Length: 248
Image (cartoon, rainbow, N blue to C red; front, side):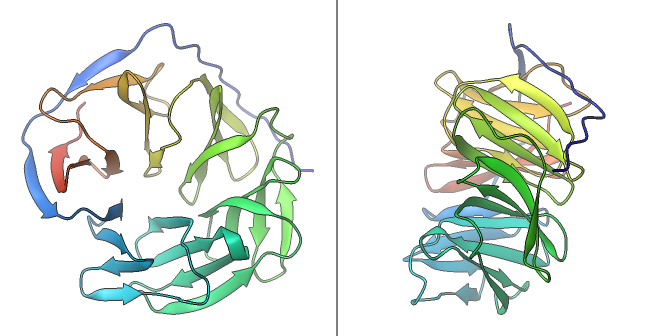
């Protein structure tokens, strides 16, 4: 087992900073938005068809899509949990390759590199790195004491959410951050900024910058989802996608 805890920082959230937004513009209108990548490309999901602009992907044999990973703007991963299958798509949503997990039951996946995937092994309740070519996995950390309820990743980092905490890992298996948190199972992460939600509202957290979760002040909006992307946030409210400058 690969466990390298070079840096371990535990943050207790006694309070939160509050951040406001301005300079907003509506950039898209749809009731089916599920993801926005670092290029600002918007993905919709309609009747299990994944749509990006004029491009469309659908696989009737695999049925319901469980998860979509758009952390690499050139490659999109679609996960079908019921069939334990991931399909890699190119930037026009054409299938490149299919991976079927036969060695474990997987609940969450994420793109870690060109030939590796993050994944949560539900049997062992562990975070793993899975190499597609060799079909082998490496556990990255000790089993979680609570079930994993949320997951979001980039190629270098991933956030894992349990019922009581958020955990940030790198690809060496080092636990970089642990934040006590109880909230909804909606995470968004662009490799820099993490977004999470609970009954009080939406929070952001930037590794090596923030010491605590920052409560986002949305006086004009009741966002369903938030997507961080570069220096911007995309607010998904009602059927509108609103682009706003990332606060300092």
